[in-house]
Image (tube, rainbow, N blue to C red; front, side):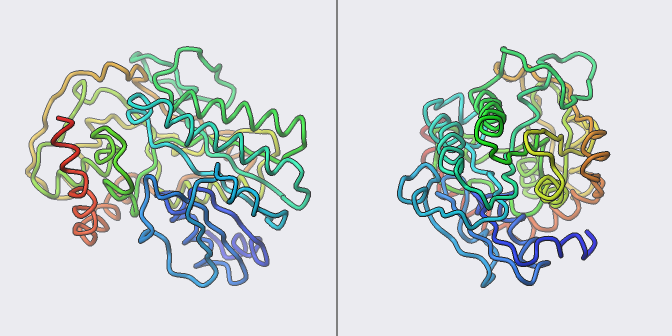
Length: 355
C-alpha cells in the first residue's frame, strides 16, 4: 500500500469493534504501523479472540467487553472519524449450535451500535463487515461470480448468515433514516497470520477449535494429522489474504459510498481439495486426506466474488496470490505453534465430552 494512502488516516481517531480478533488485530496493526498520528480504540469481549493478538502500540487503547454492553456504548462519544464494525459470533457451525448466542453477538451488536451512533455528526464512515455467504446461491452446480446486486435468498444455511444479512438491512435502514454513513464490506474467505485455532471461550462445538478451513488444514498438515475433506473437497471458495481484506476495509472507509456495498475478495475460485493439496505441497507434509461426507447444513457449494465494482469505485484489488499468502501463513503457524496448541488444549476436555 503506498504511503500516501495511509497518510489519509493521519490525525484521525478510529474505533475497531471486535479489534482483538483475527481481522481486527491485523487492521489495527497495519494502521498503527503505517500512520504516525492516529488513535485506535478497540472494543472486544474476547469471546473468540486473545488479547495477545493485539499489537503493542501506544496509539492503541483497549476496552474489554461487548459493544452491546450499556456501559461501553454509553461511553462512546462523537469523536471518531472512522468505525470498523468487525464483531461477530464466529461462525456458521457455532451459530447452528447456539442461535441465541449468535443473535446476541451478531445481530444485537449491529443494532445497538447503530442506535448509539445515529446522532453522531463527526463520523465520516462506519464500515460493516458482512459475509459473501449470505448472498451466495445455495447450490453445488457451476460456480457463479456473486455480485453486489445478487438477490438475497430466503433459504440460508445458518443463523450466522442470517445475522450478517440482517446487519446489512440495518446498515441500509440507518443510512436512509438517520444518514448514518454506513458502508457494507462483504467478506469472502479470509486467511493469514494471526488466526489462532481455539482462541477465546468454548462455544459448545468442535468449531470453537477447528473454526476455519485454512488454519485447520495448515495446523494438521504441519503436525502430520489427517486433513479432513468434506464432500471430497468439491466446494469452492474465494480465499483472500488478511492484509488484502484490511486494505479493502480501509478503502471502504475512505472511498466507499455511504449506503452502498462492496465485495472484498480475490475474485478467484479455489476448491477445498485444491487448497488441501496446496497446503500439503507448500508445507512438505505427508498428511493423508480424510474423506468425510457432506455437511448437512452446507448447501453453498461453488462460489467466488465479482470484484468489478470494488475495483472500479474503490480502486481495490487483492494483490497477494494464494500460494504466496499460504507460505506466509504456514511460516507464521510454525513460529506460533506453541500459542496455537495452548489454545487448542484449553478446550480439549470440552471437545472430548462433545465427541
